[in-house]
Image 1 (cartoon, rainbow, N blue to C red):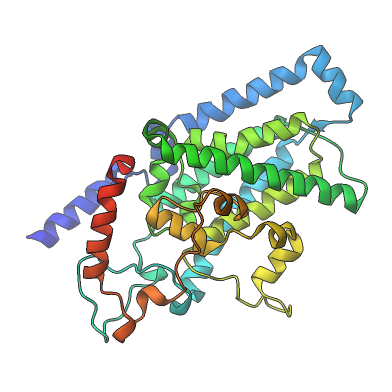
Image 2 (cartoon, helix red, strand yellow):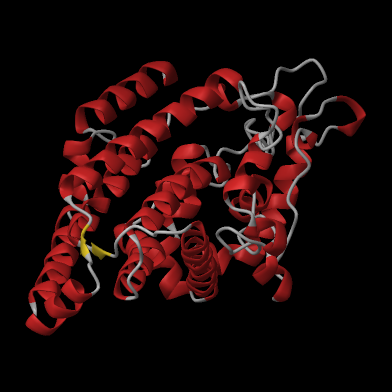
Length: 352
């Protein structure tokens, strides 16, 4: 019967190391199917190392006191980031509250009765393939071991100035590349389509990317700022804090108002202390990015909202809890399916 067929299919998928969509669920299978995550960083790292061996370049690096980030620091970051992704996912499974949920996770096309329990974050299918790809994507950061960085900043003013400059440019770079990838179908298919198979993402959706996308949206930015003498401590701060930020952006819940343990402030307030420029340029949060995954055509920026507002692509996103409210305020999945169907027609060319 159907149950036996489904069971056989699941067992077959496990034996093959892939899920029902063909995405690898273990690292051995992943690297066999996507070798670019291995040879890509090797080529980029070799190119950067070779550039640094050119006498004129080496002389300039010595003059400015620039040294490689090093394998010890890079491996420490990779271990931290992979562990953090698992920790954030675990926290969401245990503590995510329905009133903070942005999208409905229920099967499409079925009307929701008032007494029907709604699907929550922890009820979703285990994201094994996304967790594996997340680990592989983060591991490509090994290239930073040979990237040259300037000495640590000596004043808070210099640290803040460099951090602001990096954050501002990275957001601008991300906005332009991201928007282009959505507007041109060839670029979309090659760079970004995979990421948008996650329409209702969990935190692992942040790094559910192709290698070429990760290079364009992150590693090229780091290369450019290395050439400008980016201080080591600024890079470390932005990299670690940015990793946490992108995991939160993809968690599908508004958790900015969660009070931090042992501190009289919320996560959003803590974020503003570490990245105060968001108060000036507008913070791009989970609601905005979740809406981007759901609808595709808005909120292209990484950290701030001013560019989306300037170019007319900003949307504030869903009100937390609204999509899963029962009773008179409920949005039935049947009606939502019709709405999504109409929208799918307009986005069909892009999605295909």
